[in-house]
Image (cartoon, rainbow, N blue to C red):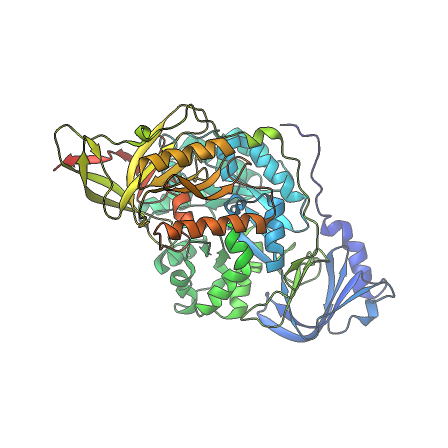
Length: 604
């Protein structure tokens, strides 16, 4: 795949070594000196007062008690004023698309929160636009003033035979991507049944990554820690973020994996798993903090990795250990310990000034030696790629949908049926496989009480396909529907509603605007988040998108939903590699057995 422009890489340590040596030896002046701070050393877990950091060409030349000997008349002096100097924060596993933003706008949103490094898996756009979409994300990532390394998506589709995607990723695609300058490894290997079964494509992708000397990301979304877990580990994944309980974190770390524990907009998996460190006393260097999925409202109003660290500290973690989990641990895992993750010579000068290690106010952010945020305000440019028009035309629906397209028919002459129902779990990615007795009216199964309908509308190839089922847990009331073209990971259109006419209105609206999220109540649109790029992202500023996202969340609450950040649960209803029950364009999937199950089980 050929491109007209090649992304610019940050110069290597070797390129700058001579000048770094001269500054450290006092033979040349530093470009910048951060003076008089408390040096948080994540290698030794110490906070050392009265140190200064000398910077040359965006890298640290030396960290010394007194840097006056390498300070010249043109050296920029930044007074730390006895504040803590900590490394820029690293997110070890995340999806930029979940922020509803492009890499440029995502960077603009998180830089003021102290995030200077991200390891991102763009498998959302891969499902819609294939390798070309991955390259767009990769190239814009390398244009940013902070470090964004890309993991090549491994699984599109995430579970072959269980869903249909807009594009499929091949082993050849993975091998090609390993030659790109900003690719750090293979994205989360979600097809864990394929790895366990020795699937040739999955093993070829892993081999291409390991042959390139890069890291294989894991995704083992199963509570089974027996032979299947052992088989998955033997396949090569080096980390996993799908753990939920303490036993999950312990099992992964004992077997040589890094346990990535996440706090996203709706995934609250830190408190239970960090007990392996705070109570069991296991080696904390094998645990990494990450976000996985954060939407724009969370980023703008609550934070990013600083939010995760604060939460870990609130869960009983020592602040210095929590910082290690978001800096040096992450860098070491990806083979970048000599590049990022600590405030030591040669590393990129990614520095945060903060007055308190527990509450972690982000008062100044320096990336590659330049101030990029000050007192919560962005102070750098985040350049945009020119996204072609074709990426804004990805919602293809054959016809205008009607209420009849969302009808579920019952067997003749029955009054009630038993349905297999998806059960939403608050603050967790897994769902429950439930059963509900539902009424039948004129041969059509009706929603009842806390159960409403869920549908997947095919939107990649305009097949006209609509898969219908039932769901519980959102607690919606009245006549309403919510539709989204963010539907991990195949990213068709997910529609949830209490009324089939509202479901049709919502689906047609997204086809009209080219993708996003909408909510209808009583024939009126009460919220809209427009996501024109691949139906997943907006290139508008994060604050604008966050405003729309907040209105969407308020609209969900107005319709009766009481769950925390329930949009994230909505967006994962089609993710057929996480237990227990999911919907795809091919049917209702029991992800415990990876078998299709009928929507209606029996008559009553």
